[in-house]
Length: 255
Image (tube, rainbow, N blue to C red; front, side, top):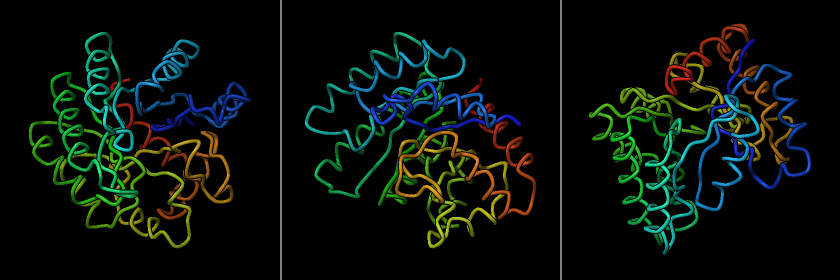
């Protein structure tokens, strides 16, 4: 069984004490590839170092996360652009809109999101989207770019069936993580109505641990709990979920 963790921050300081062992645990359950989202310029060195240590296993993205859009966002975007000019990345991400804490930089978030989507079209790369308390605004922002052929993933999807249909209609995939195991989240019911061809698996490690580890540090090996929950909801084997979602990820990222 071959699995892909399409979204994990393995460069995060939470893994400094046991990163090698953590990756080994994930490989032991069948995870062969790990996709590392960019968040800001400070994360780049750690991300690229992991790629050097695990070539063709850890794949970096490049992007400015909406929560890191601050006063210096133009400088941060300039760094993103310079890296895109220098070398190949598997995707631009994670990018998007996040209005959870406040909307102080809402306009700048929108500007950064649109600029990075345009770069994705220019470099023919998929995008990986972060959206929180901004689902419809994010969908509306993506639509004109999707019409031009932009593809990608709505990472850590936890929205409604109606939102899922709208996203799928734009030819985007839904990243399903630990939230699908939360009893009152309602995501398992949504996933039950969706064709597997629209889904990829992710952990968002070290965040959003699945049950039974909710509230603790997440890690890539816990992807098996996401896998098992989807298989249970869809009433199919874990092997079938693994095969289809892995193929979806490989087709999107071109690996």
